[in-house]
Length: 284
Image (cartoon, rainbow, N blue to C red; front, top):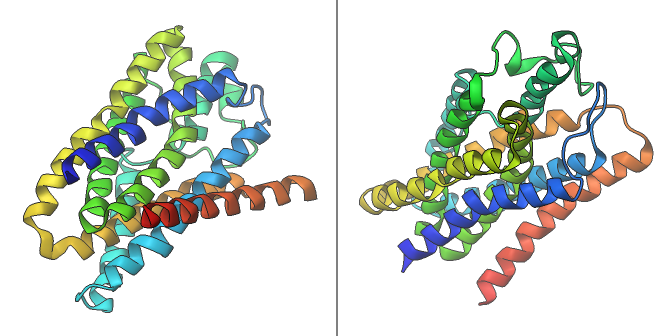
C-alpha cells in the first residue's frame, strides 16, 4: 500500500507539476519578457514555494527525525553535511533550480548576449548561465531536471516510509517548488525547440523520473529503516537549500510596499497550505 501511495504522489509531484506549470503559462503566469522585468505573478509562485519548502522542513521533517532515537547532534551534523552536499551538487550544475538563470539563456537567444549578461531580471548575479552555452534542444537543462526529480522521488519515499501524512506534505512541497522551476524550463525549451508541444513532452519526461526515484527510495529505505531519521534530515537539507539558496535570493530586490506585502503574504500562504494539508491528512 505504501508503494502505491509513493508512486501516486511522485507522479503528481513530478508530471503534475509540469502540466500545472504549462497551464499557468497559458494563463499568463510565465516569465516576464524584456530586460529588467519579472512578472509579479512569478514572484508570488516563488514566495509560495519557498514558504512550502521551509514549513515542510522545519515543521514536519525535522521534528519527525528528532522524535526518533537518533541523537540531536548526529542529526544536525547530517543536516550540515546535507547542505554542503547540495551546495556541491549545485556547483556541478546537477541540483540547481535556477529557472531565472535558465531564462537568461532564453534571452540570450532572443535578444543577444549583451542583454543576457546584463542582469536581465535585476539581480546582479549572472550565476549558472555565465560561460555555459545552452546545448541544442536544452539537454543540459533536462539532465539537471532528471537528476533533481530522481532525488525528489527518493525524498518523498523516505517521508512516506516515516508517516503517510508526512509523505503527502513532502509531495505537496515538491509540487509547489517544481511549478515555478518548470515554468522556466518550458520557456527555455520553447526557445530552443520552437514548439510548445515538444517542450512539454521533454519536461514531462524529466518529471517522469520522479516515480523512478520514488521506487528506488521505497526499496532503499525499506532495507535501511534504522537510518530513516537521517533520510528525513537529508530531505530537510534539500528543501532548506533550495528555498534559501535559490528561491528567496530571487525575491531579494527593491520593491514597493504593496509588492513586498504580497511577497510576505504568499510566503505565509505556502506555510499555511502545508499546515492545512498536514491537518487534513492527519484527520483522514
